[in-house]
Length: 319
Ligand code: BTN
Image (cartoon, rainbow, N blue to C red; front, side, top):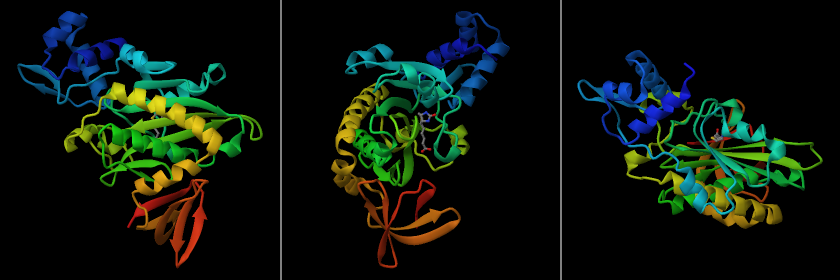
């Protein structure tokens, strides 16, 4: 089924959380019953839990607060944001336009059909419920200037989310955000360019504020549904805050690197001074997490000695 516009119109109608009958859809959209049910099943595939009650119609458990492009652009200093409905991946969207972009150009999408996570994982995020955001930057100092970047971004993201009312947000090396020991957000930095010259980077941020019960199996980690823990986040304000703060933080990072952010990492580290397992391929070592250094390397104490780990193939687990 190609017609995405009608699917979007149905989502918009359902977004108020009220009942909508087949007759109402048929009358407003001028389509038959079978086509309507096909659109509804696509909406479920996109991660929204659509319920139906005989005689009343279809409804969503929670109202959806879709992006309001005008409101966001009015309050976002400098603008330069593309607000998309459905796209393969926001990172991919910027990568395809990399030669036309200026530092700080950004995009967001209500839904990604091929969202990318780290280590080749898929990143699934329900339509209109979360944040899928990418921002472009280039570093004149080249690839070496990227060291520690993703740790800096997780610190800035954790501080933003705390300010938005998600008080217990923590970071986990190298660049995950955690709440109540569950993953809340992930960061994917993709780098382009020649090793010795300017590095073009696309920073992708995925925050899963809400996860569809039907789609929990599609994510490879234990996520969290914020409304279940009594937290509501205004997505429009969140977008403005994330883009504005990341643009400022990138300028600071270009000048000073990770060093000025390190004291915040210590306070935010979910596993600081805790016993953890470090997985290196199939090997697991137990030790104590002693934080990170100015290169974003993990400081890991094992048998009384602290070693540094930079390798992206490592993962840290609770014990
Ligand atoms: C992770 O695996 O923890 C990183 C997930 C990053 C997901 C975001 S969502 C916006 C951007 N576009 C993508 O395709 N991926 C990133």
